[in-house]
Amino acid sequence: MHSQETRNRSCGYGSAALTLSLAALLSLPSAAEAQTPKRGGSFNLATNQTIDTLDSSTSSTTIVRTIHEHTHGQLFVFDQKYSVIPDLAESHTVSPDFKTWTFKLRKGVLFHDGSGLDSGDVVASWNRYVKVSPAGKITAKGVVAVQAPDAETVVFEFDGDPGLFLSNIAKPHTVFKIYPKEIADKAKDRPLHFEEMIGTGPYKFAQWERGKSLTMERFDKYAADQRHTGPQGLGGKKTAYLDKIVWNFVAEAGSHEAGLRSGRFDLVDNIPLELKDKIEAEKGFGGTVIKPFAWINMMVNHHNVPMNDLRVRRAIQIGLDQQSIMLAAVGNPALIRLSPGIAFDEQEWSSKEGAQYYAKNAKDEAKKLLGEAGYKGEPITLLTTRTIDYMYKSAVVIQQQLQGLGMNVKLEVMDWAALLGHITNNNLWPKWHLTSMGHSIRHDPTGWDRNFRSDQWTPYRNAEMDKLLDAVGQEKDFKKRHEAFANIQRIFHEDVVNVKHGDFFAWHAHRDYVKGYTSFEGFMLWNVWLDK
Image (cartoon, rainbow, N blue to C red; front, side, top):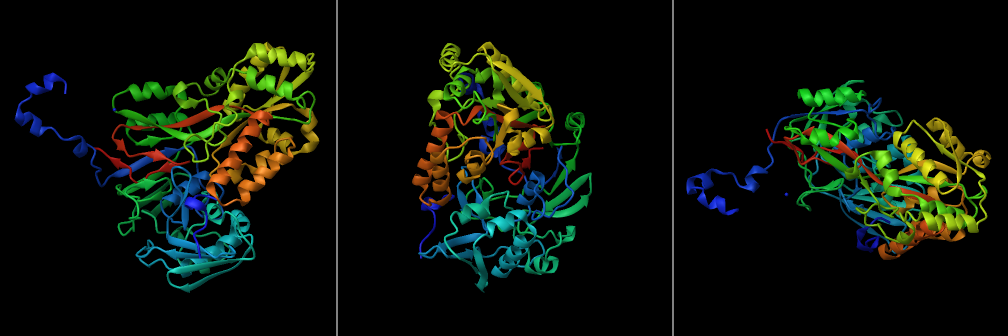
């Protein structure tokens, strides 16, 4: 037996101070004491998202997944560098032919109802998960049996090598959460009721007022993962300092700001980004930048003349002033970053391949390339949407800049659904050349398969790209996978598959007494405490 995936990775005294008396010095709290977390308090947050179900297996919404990170556990999760680490699993081994995967569970883990976690709970949760979850049907591909030979062991049997199984079950979008066997067996293929939302996390559900709020309370018997000294992304050692967390579902941005100022809310996620500096400068308020978050992109239709000419694509790529585009789209320089990476700088998959083509702002060189390509003002259609603000704002500036290069660019504005239809329906490909787009975090390089594989999303064909995508989906050695992914990024820039503009970040405003807050694609409220 051997462990799968190399490295277990997914597959702010001066001299005047001397005048202080000894008594005064002794009366001052140390920095460590001032930052010692306090237990207790009720935490109220406002989010512009809402929920119609709490069953993470049947919901694809980010907010439901985020909520369940506080209440339920998984076998494996992603840490802050997007490496796969065990959560409820103690360890795992894989047979030489990769067909048998054996997981040992952590001891002493309790559910919110007081019952102990064992392998029967995992098997029952898996059996229900693959029935009711669209992601489960994909994750379960190749699984022929899941068994519990003893209380601490779960064995997955496959009909062949399942590839990056750990990564697949760790992804937040997969949401393979563990419930008590009795609940999973009873629910079968129906959605879980509120009282059935029993997990192993640091918080447990208390009350749900549909359309208004959701309340959770600290689970005092939570078994923190002692293998770590603190939180690690979605795993590690989580500590529930707060007595209660109330998720308030509030759509209006004005209500977020008003609630924060009145003290009704401790943290909000829907205040306009242009207010960031103003609010953070006010006494009693603060904010947290959420990064990585997403990056702004422009898709290129390689099948439409003149985008089939690399010289035209390169002219667009190197002729744009990406800094001004990002500032126009986001507004605050503290919330943007110019980076050539497909993966974010914070991820272990990050690379600088293709950087020589990125953010050059070389207008004279771009004009020369257009001349060499014989471009004579043929119409170029750039699709965008007002539905997503940053897409429209960036497209307006892109149009102006490309016109400055001598390109006849027409902006076509449509709703989000129509724009997606023009991308996904190849019968509509002749109607556009460029389109606004944005990309969220991909936990693993396999998440880019659909975007860059020949004619799956981008109108583009490249056999070398397809082979590299196959390699990152099949290779288990981290260094080899990283090399393959770096080459995917090389081709992305070299062939101008798309044009990346830059990374941008979210921002959440809060009162200054909120400590320990961070985010990993959503609120992370374990280890948050109130300094008041």
